[in-house]
Amino acid sequence: MKRILIDSGPLIALFDASDKHHQSAINFIKSNKSLLITTIASVTETLHLLDFNRNAQIDFLEWVNYGAVEIHNIENSDFGRIRELTLKYRDLPMDFADSCLVLLAEKLNIRTIATIDRDFTIYRIKGKKKFKVVLS
Image (cartoon, rainbow, N blue to C red):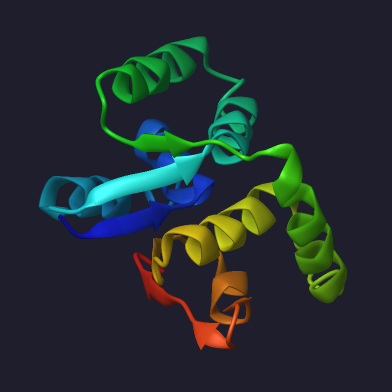
């Protein structure tokens, strides 16, 4: 099965009807046939930014529990690479959730990402590979 990384932006938009990307996030999820993969950092960021609406948080947690997205761990040994990425892109600046997704792209050899964050057009996977951005 094809795999796609998913950033917090589309996840937030999916559960926030007032988000300008809400409908495109719904359309993406409905048409997506790939396995969605993210990190706990993106889940945390999503929950933090949905904190204005407890029902949205609960709905998101239920959706994750249902198995809609696969969550990969970040290990202690990954923090050296996360630091390197954060230093490399500090002028953007790269946040922790983004650096975890770039790391995951490298570890799992995934180049496609569902995001509304333009920074992923600048970030590079080891070997200077570009991301294929969907849902931008």
